[in-house]
Amino acid sequence: MEHIELSIVIPCYNEGKNVYLLYQRIKEAMRKIGKSYEIIYVDDGSHDDTLKYLKKVKNIAPNKTVIVKLRKNFGQTAALDAGFKQAKGKVFITMDGDLQNDPADIPKLLKKMATGYDVVSGWRHARRDPFGKKIFSKMANSLRKSLTKEKIHDSGCSLKAYKRECFEDLNLYGEMHRYIPAILMWKGYRIGEVKVKHYARKYGKTKYNSIRLFKGFMDLLVVKFWMQFSGRPMHLFGGLGAIVSFLGFIIGLYLVYLKIFYKAGIMNRPLLLLVILLLIIGVQFLMFGIFGDILIKTYYDQKPGSSYSIEKIM
Figure 1 (cartoon, rainbow, N blue to C red):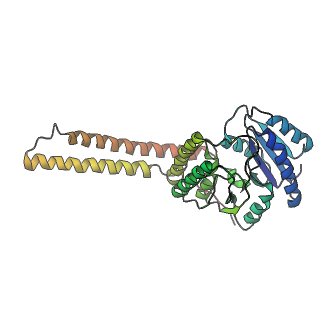
Figure 2 (cartoon, one colour; figure 1 turned 90 degrees about the vertical axis):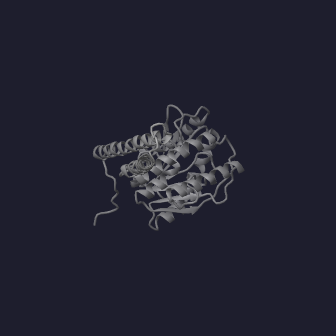
């Protein structure tokens, strides 16, 4: 079997008019690079003629083309995960199937990676998208950077390069594909960025909408929680429980003070109900933290791997 250096993973959903043209551009770019490669197309439940064009590419380059056909549209994250599991290369290259990414930029990613990075992300510094899409993307990038402390400008750019080992212990789900660099940064991998070209869409329709934006935000909260508290959820829930319980305790002391020194009745005061509620919520948070710690311990005990990542042993 030929040793494969690059695996190019391309999710496709209703991109029939684009995939064959994209193959021609990839072939030309790879001819100049001179590295062995494979192209993994993941048909994410397309209902147009995408599969027909993919089969045409397969007939032209049978030894360099892999087609993964999903039963229905599961989303870009699932499509990428399916492609990664089929990839045999030392470096994974991802890009969209809509011709907006330029395969000629792949050497830029590899050159940056050769300087010591594990992940290199493209930065569409001159985007050719509708104004509304650019605004929403800019807002999402700002929110992502503020929560994850990841510094790259354009995590939503699909043109990226990853070393194979990045995915040996990484499970993808939901809309988490745009947060892969942030998760890998949390694991200790080095993240780089290069400016890449970006073209306006000519064929097909964009898959980006407000629903995906909302789902992406929900997944961002999960990523933030996992990055900060996956090792010890007790630090979050226990801290909240302590704060809420302490607040209830302080209000309770105030009521006791009124009762002792002012002979005030407290049984019918709403503050008494608030004290009871705060103490109950505080105890519940503490229990969530304990149960969360137990679940995390079970998770790490049963999964192959650990909560840390070793770069090398010398």
